Image (cartoon, rainbow, N blue to C red; front, side, top):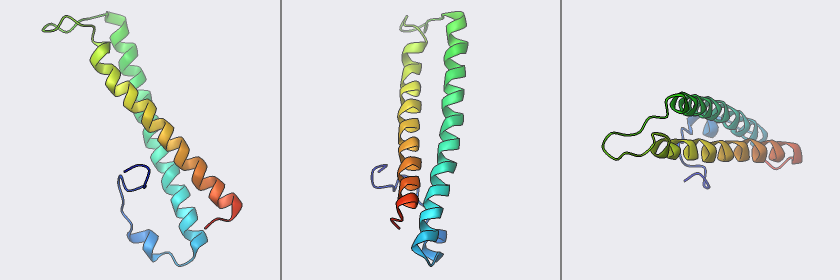
Length: 100
């Protein structure tokens, strides 16, 4: 879904914009907004890891460190950050090249 840019689509405004340049600017603004949200998510994930590393606790039922199940959240944060950076870069380069 992310590759086809349909993971979360609210396209009322983008269909109302008349010029291709306005649509390209809209895509860039949306990409920057999504990147800001992803950066906040990645920051909270980092704080979660830092909190968990202070106590070195284990899960009671499975006797595994807490960071093991939390690593899925960290991996998701890294992947989301990579996709967010990619979207901002591609939309910025499209604006620079005039590819509307």
